[in-house]
Amino acid sequence: MTETFDIPPRDKAAEGILWLIQSEGLAAGDRLPAERILCERLGVSRTALRGAIAQLTSAHVLESRVGSGTYVCAPKPLSVFQSAGAFSAAVRDAGLVPSARVLSQGFLPAGEALAAKLGVEVGATVLELRRLRMADGVPVAIETTYVNSEICPGIESHDFAVESLYEVLKQKYGISIAHSIERISITRVNEWESEILGVEEGEPAFYERGQEWTEQMEPVEFFKSVTLPAHFRFASDEVWDTGAAEVSDAWLRS
Amino acid sequence: MAQIVSSHEQPIYLRIRRKIEERIDRGEYPAGSVLPSENELADEFGTTRLTVRNAMDALVERGCIRRVQGKGAFVSSHNISRTSVPQGGFRKVAEALGMEPSVRLLASGRRKAGAYYGWLFGIPEDDLLYSLRRLNSLDGQPVALENTLIPLSLLPTIEDVDIQVFSLYETYELLGHKVARVQEKLDVLALTAREAGLLHVDAGDVAMVSEGVSYDISGNAIEYARNISRADFAGYTFKF
Image (cartoon, rainbow over all chains, first blue to last red; front, top):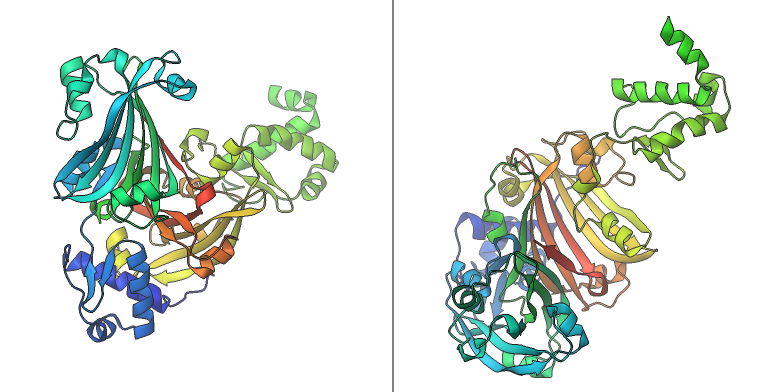
């Protein structure tokens, strides 16, 4: 028979705070009750409570503001891979306003690696589009996209600060993305990225690379992005069995 | 009559193989249990250990039995399909890398669900959860820490299965709760001193955190898992 143990105090405090947020519907910018009140309510010591707050702050659930207490973080846009939502859709779903700034845009001759990814000849002309993506005006990600411009001549005339790349490809060129592969790992932001994103150099971030194809497996784009985990989340909701009952996404979105 | 004749004509290792299969089918050797040792079976059938081993080889190849060094032979489930293993499952990843996976159990026990996990699993807060902390290694090098919570009300016999032998996903399937849906979210964070120590990196180093909830076909949440992976081994690939 397995031993039954008491929930360790710090876990008890962290779970208590998560439950408080969930059950009382605490929203972005709401202040947590004072330490003394929380300790009493959750039945934990101050040490345990502080440990829990540090843990949840590091997990981007809470933020401490010097001199004024602990607050619930703004809801993070959630990019659920299977819903193939673009950045803007994820931001809008979180109740925030998406925007973009074009950092650079131009043509370059494809090197070997890029040519292979886009299925073009080495030296073929490729559109490089580098954008800063924002949510409610706060920098979230730097995204660099390479598009096979042979399949979408004239694409450079669009203003991708306001237009969606996917929409332009679809509406004007009849190109729809049907297959995609993405890989998400970790990086630290470099000096240039830190200036654009307004964070310290070396700050940890998601590093995403992806390739997208049409239904006929014709390569459309290759992209990479550096995304701040404090403002954005990657997620997956994978149905393995088509007969699976519907489940709530309350936890996924919490 | 014909049956008896044919069984006499069969080599002994084939008869033993059929006997073992029958016992597995009848549930005499239930899925997840350990088989009698090769010596015990040899005594029972009045033959040598080598013949018993020969009888079992084909069952191992077919995936009916799994041999584990130092532990014996275990009964798998016939309906575990290779494709049901998660894309990112640790053993699967190790296989793809051509590295040897190992899993060390750091702690296990039962705890109350409490209000938060009660909500997450949709169970009363006094219900018990089975809690596991494991350290995953590749070629002996630690790469990920995994904390898992499983509601005992849904999987009351989970503690009886040797999780060093079967992955948790295989175990859920053995117990009739095959995973049908998985929700997962990723985060990046700095490691605490304790976590860093277990992963053989420095405190403050970054790691990727994946939190996931797995559901069975009826939509019951059967597992909550939080996986902390060393940055140099962290990476999630999604395809469609």
